[in-house]
Every structure is written in C-alpha cells, then in structure tokens.
Length: 637
Image 1 (cartoon, one colour):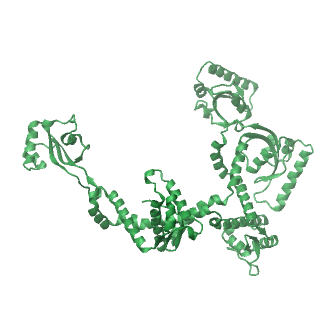
Image 2 (spheres, helix red, strand yellow):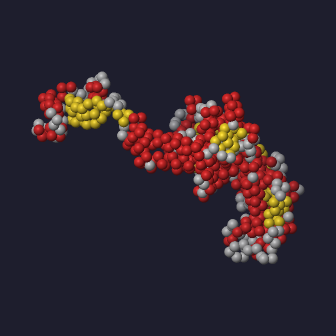
Image 3 (cartoon, one colour):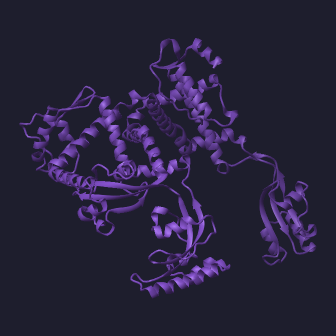
C-alpha cells in the first residue's frame, strides 16, 4: 500500500484551490509540492505517477486522514505523547544557533592545525563562590598580573603565587597542548593571546587565571612507532646509565644489521606493555608525549626509519617509525569535531548562551532589576518548607521581566521553583541569581519553541507530515492490517473466492522406491498395481523392514532428479537403477494451493481488498469536489 504524507501550506487562495474535501481545501501549489516531493523519492520509474494519477492517490490519503480525525484518533493520550516526542526531536535544531555551531567547528579546526606552549597562574575558587570570594580572587589575580607586567618573571610568579598544585613542580609551565586538552575558556585565551604577551585575567570553573604564550608551532598530526627500551633507575648512577646505554647500542647494532625489530623488542625491551606487541605503541601526537621521546620520533623521515638510542630521562630508546597521519582536511575532520563539540560542555554552553542572547534581542527582553532584586531577597523564605510558598503579602502579579509583549511575574518564578527538588535549591545570593538566569533562559526558550510553527513554514510542514502520517498508520492498522490478520472467517471466505490466483504447477504425487534386485522390484510393482498397500507388501512378500528405499511426496519440476528423469526429460541420476526402481503415482495438473501454504499472499490480497472497499465507503460518505479548471493545469506541470 502506498503511504502518502501531507505537508503544510499557507492559507489556500480561492482562485488556486484544486481540491475540497468536506470543508478542507488544498491549493494547486500545495498539491504540487507534495506530489514532487513524494514522486522524487520513488526510485523505480515504473512506479512513478504523473500529477493526474497522483491526484487520485492524494484524495484517498486525505479521506483516510479525515476518517481518523472524525474517529478522534488524534485526541488520544498515546497519540499526543508520540507526536510530542517527534516534535521535541524535530525542534532541537531550531532551538540553538546553528550558525554559531558551524563557527565553533571551523574555529576548532583552525586551532587543531597548531599547538601552543604556555604557562599559567591560577587563583582558586570554590564550586559556588560568594560574590565576595569572587571579587577577592579577581583582585588577587589582577595584583599578580601587575607584578608580571612590571617585570617579575612569569614562571617565578607562578612558583610563588599560583594555587595550581602542579605549579611547584613546573613553575606554571603547561608544555604544549592543542584543542580539547584544556577547558574551553582556557583554550580560547591561549589561542587568542599574542605570542609573548600576558593575557588579561579570565575565569574558568577552577578559578581565575592569567597565562603567557611562549610559542606556537604547526601541528604534525599523529605518529605510530615501535620502540625498544633499556630502562635505568630513577636516581641512576652514571655507571647504571652507561650500562643501559651500552646495551641499547648493542641492540641498535643488531637492528641496523638486519635483525627483526619486533623480536628484539619482545625479548629485550624493558617496556613490558609494548614489548608484548613487538614494541608497538599507540598513535600519539607530539604534545601527548614527553619532548625527549617525541622529538626523535617525529624527526624520523619515513616509515621504517630507526633512531639511534635516545635518552628520555627514564631510559634509552631505539625508535622505529611505523606510520604518520597528518591533520586531516576540514571536510574529513568536520563530523568528528562536531560530535566532540556536542559533548564539550563549555563549548555547548557558550553556543547556547549566544542563542539566548539572540532571542532576548529579538523579543526585546527587558528585566526589571528592582523587582528581580526584591524577589530574590524574599525567595529564601519561600523555600523553608517542602514546597515554595509565596507569602500572602507578596505581589504575585509583579512583573519581573517582559519580552514579546508578555510579562513574567513573581507567580511564574514561584511555579518554576516548584518544579525543582526543594532540597537541591541553595538559598545563598549567588545561587539564586544563577537559578534566576536559568529561569529567564528557559522561559524565553519555551516561548521560542511555541512559535516554531508560525516562524518556520518548513517546521510546520514537517509536523503536519508526522501528524497525518501517524493518523494514516493508526487507522490503517486498525481497519486493514489487524483485520486482515485476525478475521479468520473473512480470510477463508476471501480465499475460497480467490484461490485460483495461486496455483501449484504440474506435479508428481506418489512414491519413489528403490529395490535391491530386479526380482523384488517386479513383485513389489505387481502388488502395488493390485492395490495392496506398501505397508502390507512387506508382510505379504516376507520382506524385512528397510529392504526397500522408499520416498513418498509431491514434487514439481526441478525438485527431484528422479522425477525430472521420468516426467520432464531430465538426465538419469547416477544412483538410479531402472531395473530396480519404481515410480508409483501420477502427474497432477495445476491446482489451488492450500490457504496455509500461501497465507501471507492471501492476507496481503485481503488487505488490498479491504482497503479498496474502505475507500469506496469513504468516497460515498464524504464530499469530494475537484476544481476542474485548476485540474486542467495539472497537464502542464
């Protein structure tokens, strides 16, 4: 059965109306859009319809959907919930700033092309800092920056003032890094601060920072290497290091003389994890490995090249290059970057904030600061019980902000709070301000969601398509598909009327017997011709069970080589002996297949029968009017 789906359109103009069913009108433009979209999705040219042919299918579709509406199928809870689920999925791309997301992907790729070497100083902040703590941290990071700008060495200042625990060991030096290796605000500041400059103070989830950019370099992609390592202790003596070096030199001599690198790694490398794999290490970028190892590895010119023993500070390594992957082109990297960005909370938060800002400008969002301040001061008292309670004296209609000619009141704020777990709500000033920001954003986003059908014709069209497609499925399942499968009496009656449609071809019905001697064969055949049953022949001829090779059944052409040989001029089977073989039975002409043999086919035919019957009823029940003058225009489309 062909399922046609309906998309939305503007209000039909009377002069362009093609079709009217009951009071519902369809314009020529709307019909042609639907026709062209559905016809273009049909790959087999044999099944394509011209516009006039398609009009008949379209009328049938509209009648079925109308019948479903009349029966109230679109008012059930299950239908509404399923449609709401579809709408949520369809609305998602409209409730974010796609242009900003595309910009973020391009920005991330540009950063991926280079690596940055930077140092930083951090002043920590608690998870939910008070305004006072935030101000204190900002003043401290500003003071430290002033010291650096006025001549204090950055790394010395990091060792002295930074609250990053690693600063005591690395003096604030973070080494080389690239995208996704730092939180997004930190990454952004690192890539936008000029070379050699000190950034302004900036905030991340960890606290306030300043950073200094030392170097930029081109990203070299990822390298795949194997290595043989001769390790020495952490506080090795010169003698211990020398011993490890001499062993590494000996192994290097064996390698360059043609010895198998992987076998030497398995036997002699002290890196047990890679030794099991012949020295192979996972792919890595330069910034993911210590410079003492990454430098010699990336210096290898081509696959198969082998480095001389190099000291990493942990041992001596002989490195063999196995492969190199450059940074992929943008089009190849785009999809993976998009998915990683979707899972990067900081990046997505910034994207969503940009969208909220855009909506607020669009709808002329106007906060009433005094009203908001007053509401927040009294909110903590609302949260003392199990549910937020607004004091009787509160002005529940007091507008806290306005947008799109709507006022959002104290009552709306209280309703918002009631939807949250009361125990998870913090009553300190900073937390309430943050929660109120969420309230603002969710309110304006909900309004934007409610306007999608009005703002975007293609969205309205998709929703109508889902709506009517679901109705068509539900009513077809109820009146056609389920009935055809469960109406046993109706199916049997339909079968008796239409059983000549599915016939068995000419077939042999009978028994194929192979005897052990010509004499036995002749006796068996005589007894069969006398009407003695095969089971009785065993006793009659005193034959032991199993002395005859017997096959009983029904075979068509090509289904058995012996039957083909006797009735359809097939070659004689090698294992068949004419003098000891018997074919007992007859050919039958074409005959109807039993219902159970072709139940699936008859159910499909019965469905088609029920549908055609239903369509005749619908066309008799509902008034269908075609504008003949407009219909004539279909010939020109």
